[in-house]
Image 1 (cartoon, protein in one colour):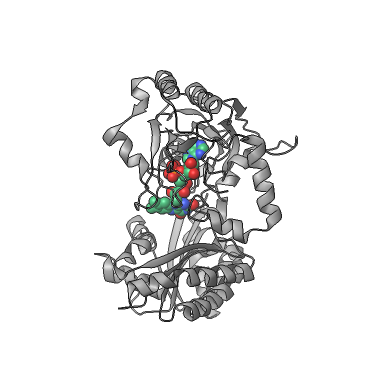
Image 2 (tube, rainbow, N blue to C red):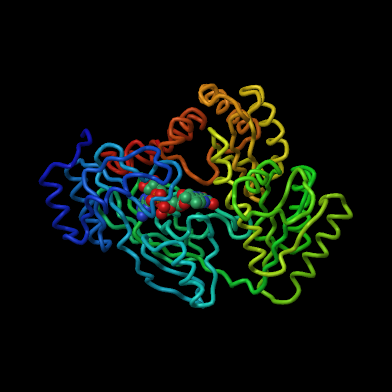
Length: 470
Ligand SMILES: Cc1cc2nc3c(=O)[nH]c(=O)nc-3n(C[C@H](O)[C@H](O)[C@H](O)COP(=O)(O)OP(=O)(O)OC[C@H]3O[C@@H](n4cnc5c(N)ncnc54)[C@H](O)[C@@H]3O)c2cc1C
């Protein structure tokens, strides 16, 4: 059956399911049709915010019967356009499903509605003196259903894993409107295919996630944040390895930043200040954390001392208090903002094996220079996960139209180097609309065929978030 825009009788049926409080229109609906940067403007047949799993199931059943398409939406912070309806789909916003259903300190689990924001989930864990470790820049707005559907990463993946590793069970409304209650809190369950993993990173193409059971951890009692100067990414790799081994696994984050990236921060962000007195080519922002109080700072100082002796670091500052630690992190978080005044950019969210990061940076730099001579590279990000945000800026004072014309060549150059190092063209932001055609070209045909088979098996009418991902 071809997909259709919702006819009046379906709209009326959905309106009746959610009631007046659940229908968003005008100024309430408009912001949900645009992602943050204004790319991929959207068009929805109806924007609804159901209040319960039962309401979601009834909406999806009505849509399935009529062959009407659906786009699920969480906090609308996704960076690849997956959350924006393109052709009059029914937009299901999860913003009214915000109940923390259960929190167990002994079982170390948290069970929440999908519309609970990531920050609210973190706070719910703190209330029982536990940690929910996923942390990303959009955590005040993005929702648990969204971070599950995009398999979000962030700054603590090195220690705790990405979202895929933090989910114990899911509740999902399937594309025919049936509710799958997979909300188990089991640490072990070897009874066949682990179906929750289809929905984690599924970008709303296989169902609507309505609830999740999550893993919690002991809360760290001490943190030490270090801003270290380095001569090269090779030295960063040695330092990362040293810090992980010597701290006994206490490295929570390890972020790499080039001088050029930070130079733009000092140039464009008011109040941003270099923690060190001299300039160096590369920097690492390292966070150590421990469940015990008292010993961590001494351990971190000893590691830095050894790294200095081994020539891995050239200088370093250790945050004296939380405000200083936040100031170090601020430098890292505003790099994306600081590059905006510099002109046109092509952005890539690359992952390669951790040990290949230095070689990738060298190879990709040379390939981009061949594709667009004079283009400036801003490389920064989660070195500890092999995930580099690799942004290419137009040449200083260069012609924007000329740079735009070179974008295809730049992309091929970066993607070819990712392939050479057996990496991924989307480490943590997902596929959505932005990378859909790219994965079709770059993934193995057998992988694409398996993805299509899964989609056809679970969503034979193709109503769930059509046009996204595959
Ligand atoms: C400032 C900033 C910093 C960021 N930092 C990071 C980072 O460090 N790491 C990272 O990985 N990402 C990061 N992101 C990207 C973004 O925040 C994540 O992709 C986040 O996981 C999206 O969650 P959301 O609730 O906003 O989902 P949305 O943007 O609403 O949706 C994203 C996708 O998930 C689907 N979806 C949403 N909710 C559901 C549901 N309940 N059921 C089924 N499908 C659903 C949508 O259809 C869409 O395909 C950042 C974004 C911003 C703006």
